Amino acid sequence: MAGEKCWPSNAELNEIREIVSCMARVNKEEVRVVVSPYRICPLGAHIDHQGGTVAAMTINRGILLGFTPSSSSQVVIRSGQFKGEVEFRVDEIQYPRQTTTTKNENYAKDSSELKEQCCWGRYARGAVYALQSKGNNLSKGIVGYICGSEDLDSSGLSSSAAVGVAYLLALEHANNLVMSPIENVEYDRLIENEYLGLKNGIMDQSAILLSNHGCLMSMNCKTKDYKLIHLPKEQQYAESGQPKATRILLALSGLKQALTSNPGYNRRVVECQEAARILLEASGDSEAQSILSNVEPEVYEAHKCKLESNLAKRAEHYFSENMRVKKGIEAWELGNFKDFGVLIAASGRSSIQNYECGSEPLIQLYEILLRAPGVLGARFSGAGFRGCCIALVEADLATEAASFVRREYLNLQPELASHTSEDKAVLICDSGDCARII
Image 1 (cartoon, rainbow, N blue to C red):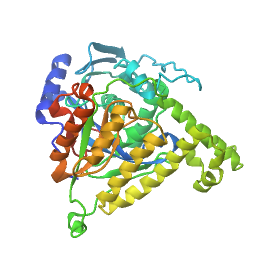
Image 2 (tube, helix red, strand yellow):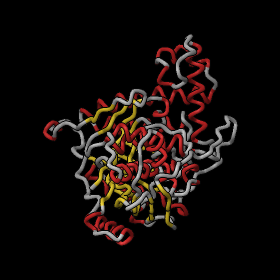
Image 3 (cartoon, rainbow, N blue to C red):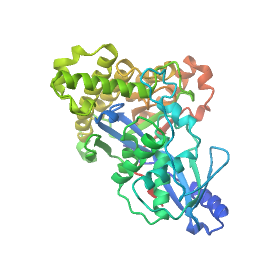
Image 4 (tube, rainbow, N blue to C red):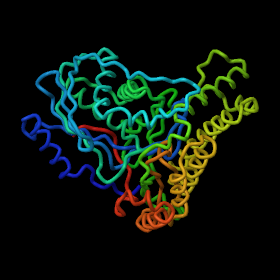
C-alpha cells in the first residue's frame, strides 16, 4: 500500500482539544482524543454473522472523540455532525432498545435504517450498557466532543462501529478499566446486537480494533482467531509484474437514504440461518447452531438441492465468499494485487447476484470503477443500499481513475452526483491503523 496520509492532523487534534477544554473548563493538555478509523472489507462481505472468515482493514479516515473524565458520573457529549447535547449518568441502568424481528415483516428496519432511527447519543448509552452488562463498575462520566471525517459520507464504512468503539475506549480510560482489543470487540457487539437490536456480525469492530497499517486483518468470526497478513518486502516485487503500490478509492454515490423497497439486511441473516438449519438437518445434525460455518462444504454440495431459490443463493454466497477470502489471503501474502483485485470484483458480483443486496446507483458505481484505469478490483461497501463503493487501484493511476469515475457517474446519475462536491465525490485513501487514544 502507498504511504499513509497524516490522519488525524495536528490542526484537527488542536481544534477538538480546544472545544473540549472549553466544555469541561480544563487545560487542553488534559484532553485525550480517541482515533477510531473507518473500515473497508475487500473480502468476506456478509458472512461474519454466519461465523465465516473475513479480510478487512481500516482507512485513514474515521471518528475522533475528544474527551476528559468528568468530575462526577455525568456524561456530556456534543457532536460535530448532529445538533443538541447528550447528557446522562453512567450510574443509570441502560436498557436495550425494543426491537421486533418478525420473520415475515417487510424489513423497513434493515440494519442501516435501524442505525438512522437511533438518535446519535444512543451509542454512548450503548457503550455504558455493554460495560455494565459485564459487571464493570462505572463511576466517572466523560465530557466529550465527537466528529467524523468531514470529506465523506461514512455510510457503508462502519461509522457506527467506529463510534461505539470510541465511546468504549473513552469510558474505559476515564474509569481506569483495562480491556484487550478482543474484549472490546465483544463489548461493541453488545452495543450493536443487544442494545440497538442489529443482526450484524463482528467484522466491523474487529477490523477497527485489530488492524495495523499496511496489513490485511483476517478473522475467523466463529472462533475469533485472527491474524495480520503482511505484504512481502519491496524487493520481492522485482520482475513480478505486480504494481508496487496501491491505494484505495472511495467513490461516494450521493445516496444517503436506504431504499426500503429492498428486503432488509436482517432478513438476509434469517435466510442464511434457515439455509444452515435445512443443510444441517439433511446431514443428520439437528443439534448444531444454525449458522453456515457449522455446515461442512461437502455437506453443502451434497444437500444444496434441498434449498429453495433464495436460500440457495445465500448459501452459495457464503461458501464462495469463504473460498475467496482464503485465496485473497494467499494473494496478499505474495503481493499479488492483481489476483486480489479479481477476487474483490467477484465478491462484489456475488453480493449483487447471490446475496441480492445493492441498489441501482451503487451497482452502476461498482461497474464504473471496474472500467476505470488502474483499478484492480471494486465492490460496494456495506450492504450497498446507500453510501459508497471501494476500489483497489494502482497508486500511479489513482488520480486518473478518480477523475474517470467522477465523470462517468455524473453522466449516469447527475442528480445523486450533485449531492457531493466534485472534489469529494471520489476520495483517494490509504490503509489505516487500529483504534487508539492519543
